[in-house]
Image 1 (cartoon, rainbow, N blue to C red):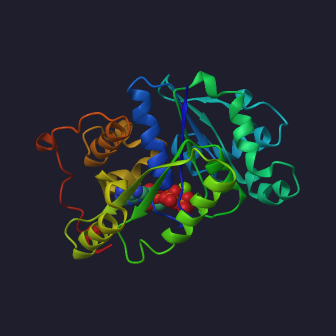
Image 2: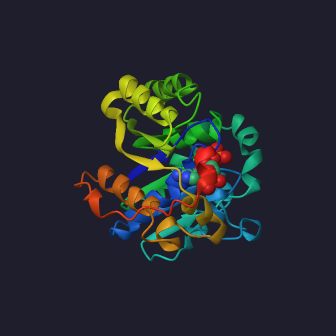
Length: 273
Ligand code: ATP
Ligand code: MG
């Protein structure tokens, strides 16, 4: 039995893709057979794993509309346990193509049925909208993970997202759970970060992951090298935190935080971001 986790937030730039890539990577590193699905026309998950999205000919788009089976879209990655179904701009028109189809909300779920049994985990990166692609991702998922950025207006839009999740639960996918809310890009030197953390914990209580992802230059650099953070800098704080998130999701013990090597503090510009 595989578990399908989608990473959703209609807000852009909150860390969905970064979380999808690094969660999938650590699941695979922990010997879980993992399939990462890029379900965003931007194709950032695809390029973040070092695959040239412009050269991809068989993507999630073709599988979604049954032009090929999803099995024919699977790419190998640096880890044998981690496979990728890529995406690119061809997916951009699919919201409109989907509109008139029967069972338009279940197209991704149907595609996954052909491949689900080969994996322990399927992680879906979704686009920054609440359109039909995100609805397909939610309808196909056992749970959804919501990243929020430690920034002004972080919680704005969350009510709308949670309403959408409720609607999907009621109408399309009764089993859908919230895997958790993940605070990302935290800068612990600022009051703002602390305020967002406090506010999120007040509202969403134990739904908020213990693990918080810090703002980190190493994390932001890694997609440019086509690598998950661990393969880019295995001792970085970002790698460690994403490993902790993975452990939390697997219900494993947190790591000993004392031994953590922090990043050099020369990144003064980060403090001002
Ligand atoms: P979109 O909505 O456009 O798909 P997203 O929610 O997928 O965006 P990401 O692409 O993961 O967000 O992150 C947005 C930008 O922030 C990227 O340039 C990414 O490299 C960077 N980033 C993500 N997480 C961190 C972090 N913890 N520290 C620093 N930079 C980060
Ligand atoms: Mg993204």
